[in-house]
Amino acid sequence: MEFTNQKWVVAQHAQGHLHPDNYQWQEEILPEPQKGQVLIRSIYLSLDPTNRVWMGEEDTYLPALKIGEVMRGLALGRVESSQHPSFQAGDLVSGLIGWQKYLITDGVGLSKLPLLAGFPLTAHFGLLGHIGLTAHYGMIAIGNPQPGETVVVSAAAGAVGSLAGQIARIKGCQVIGIAGTDEKCEWLKKELNFTETINYRKESLQTSLAEYCPNGIDLYFDNVGGQTLDTVLHQMNNFGRVVVSGMISQYNADGSKHIFEHLLDIVTKRLMVKGFVCLDHMYYAETAFTDLLGWWQEGKIRYRIEVIEGLASTPSALLKLFNGSNTGKLLIRVSDE
Ligand SMILES: NC(=O)c1ccc[n+]([C@@H]2O[C@H](COP(=O)([O-])OP(=O)(O)OC[C@H]3O[C@@H](n4cnc5c(N)ncnc54)[C@H](OP(=O)(O)O)[C@@H]3O)[C@@H](O)[C@H]2O)c1
Image 1 (cartoon, rainbow, N blue to C red):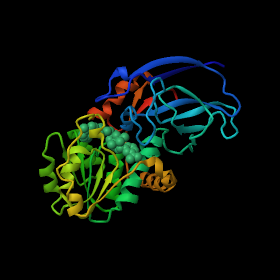
Image 2: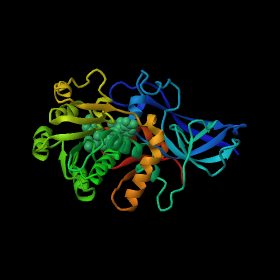
Image 3: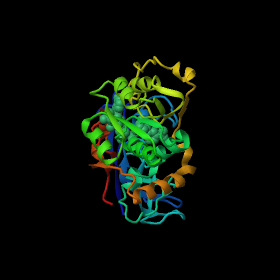
Image 4: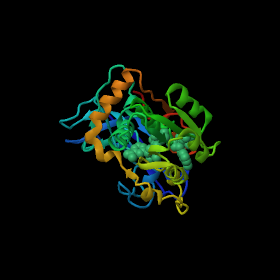
């Protein structure tokens, strides 16, 4: 059987904001998988802020992509055919399948996914996967929230932020979520039980934080960096913890990165500031997923997913993460389940 692959390759490294010219669409006929290989059909492709980080010219926590290389991307798919002893046709797998419909691989880096009774396939990205791992590891393993503490989360209505904030609520904290629209703030407060929310596009962050955190901030889960981090640092309590999950405000800011006013607070307030990348903590996945599935079954945690149809939409859909128009974990449906 012949498979026609469709893929987005890197045409130009990004400078500043992403642009359609950064990618080029290509099609190719794939050969049959050889001995030791497996052919995967992508079903859901995860769009992540880090896709922009990977589009730079320099190595970061993963090597820089080369021009002409398939765009890197985490996806979930099914094994179509296998000449590999560890995989069988029909297996559900996830890994760096890339922005393409099919991948032929030797299986290195692929994980087999269980079929979760009562959960849609998309839960592997909305609640579990790298999103759940990041929220749980960052909030629990690094942040260690204690009952009664005041916790602030930025990009709080996003995939990671919404889980991180709910986890802190489950642990008995007062949780203030920062988000960019009234609709997102309403969802956080009414449906996710956040204590208070701040629409940073309409309100003064400094003033609203002072109002909602009268006893200061004990723990900040940062997804945004830049001015938001700067403002929060200045309102942290002595010996507070800052968990740095991401800095989306800085990913497009080539040449105009935020210059910090309040870094000295790290010393004077004796803050713990810790960055992390979930890929280093795969060993922790079982702990995180056991909790997350349990909380979901008990009705204590929710997530939302936004699915956009078709691989062809991928470059334009990715921009939603940077203009804030995504309403939940952003996925591309590459092919039928
Ligand atoms: N450390 C790790 O291993 C790891 C793993 C996954 C993700 N992350 C990080 O977690 C963060 C959230 O990722 P996600 O996948 O959950 O995405 P997401 O929060 O679902 O979507 C991104 C959100 O960021 C906000 N945003 C975009 N540009 C902004 C800006 N300039 N200033 C303030 N807010 C801005 C927007 O929401 P608003 O409408 O609220 O502005 C947007 O909806 C990112 O920083 C990402 O890099 C880290």
